[in-house]
Image (cartoon, rainbow, N blue to C red; front, top):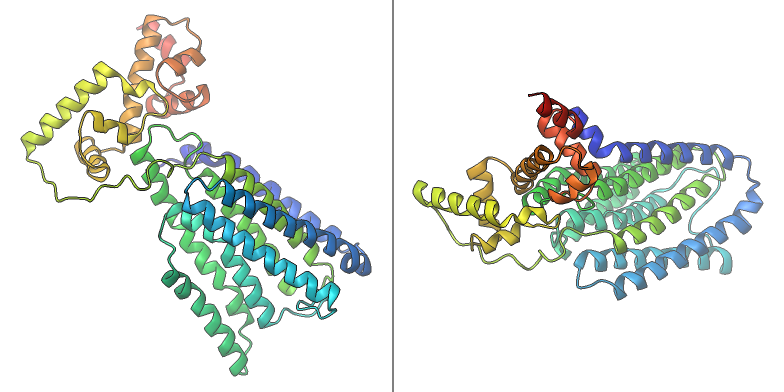
Length: 386
């Protein structure tokens, strides 16, 4: 069970990110009330939409060119392309044909506007869904996700009741569905990697924070009488696209090198004796070869000691040692760090971290405290007095 302190250590940067982005959004909505409507409609929105459209097209091209065979990057590129086309269509209708499809005044958003907004919101959920559950998004599931939205808009048109709030809450259900996958995603990372630096759920959490703030801003647009209410929304969208493209291109994706390595899972069952022999062989290999000293040590590297498919190997670690692969390797690294500090208590903690296989000194300190209840220096002092 993850403690509150561990959760805070894992996500304190994301909490700060959420607070800063929310504060900016509230301040921007307040300041937008002082923008002259003519200036907004004739200059600012045209400029912002042009910039966002350029970001979408440029980002889509970059992701297509640097997809590296990753389906998640292609999915994000298609989403950006569709959004860019919708923005281009909006600008042509509004500024060239003078037939705006979206009323920027103080009138309430219509069902059509909500349908368009929710569809665009659904596009933003493609990336986290594909990241958390690779290859889960199929055409059949796409239709299943969009069909309720279409039906709600049709019913709203046919019946005399106002269903706008029901329609506006539709993306919330999809958002919650994505949230439920984060814990499973983190567990998957721990079952396949020995280091959580730069590869676990932090980036997806920040992405979902941006979506949540964007959704809250959209909700404000529904009830606001501010004729400049679209200003903040478009600023947020531009920021989100720019930040997302940079992260998707340059962050380390945990699915790299693993998608496609799943062998056909066969029914495998071991006797107690066979499990004990495999455990002995694995422990001997870990102690003699010390593969955990490599910060990039992965579950598939264990196949050198135990030649079995990745899924079964993960289950073997879970059932034999009662922990994930990440926790299993961490134990060896902590013991190695203790051995190094016992032999040379004057060694810098940064050197101890590197020599024991941790990816950074901060990761070493955080994990050491979590596992032992003491900082590395406190442990050294207590050991020297023992």
